[in-house]
Length: 223
Image (cartoon, rainbow, N blue to C red; front, side):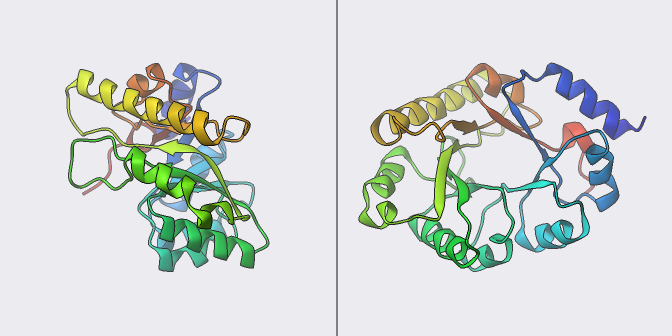
């Protein structure tokens, strides 16, 4: 068995059954992705549309592709025909573009709103009031080709576990607030995407339902 397969089986054995594993395959080769595929894994996450499209075209069609990186509006059209879930929606403008491109493809595209929970200037995302402004807007209510599945957030890159835990707890609070106010009757609003290779265990402890793991599966990224 390969190192990637060993890593996968070890990680899967530690994840609770209700937590979805998104294998972060950005910068990875088709062969590396297929090693995980051959273990039975089907959910992969990419950060750039220009990397995602050729992988979609080359690899088996039962893979569920997630867009986890910052997404520019002008790139949506390339992934709209097939993307399973967009984690990184951070503006009403982007949501409108996804809805428009989904309509062209006769699809409903699942999305997560990315909320800003980290203490870092480099992270993208909305604060809770901005997210609520989107849900209050007339434009959002008219969108028929997107489905909001929940929230996504990234914690500060730090060794301070208490800080990370506090930030994940903030995302769960935001999720509960939004759920209660806008999606109380919607069972599809049920995902909290938080936790990566370094902090997934903390995230699960704070209520994550979906973790995005790359280096713990594929090995550290080559610089």
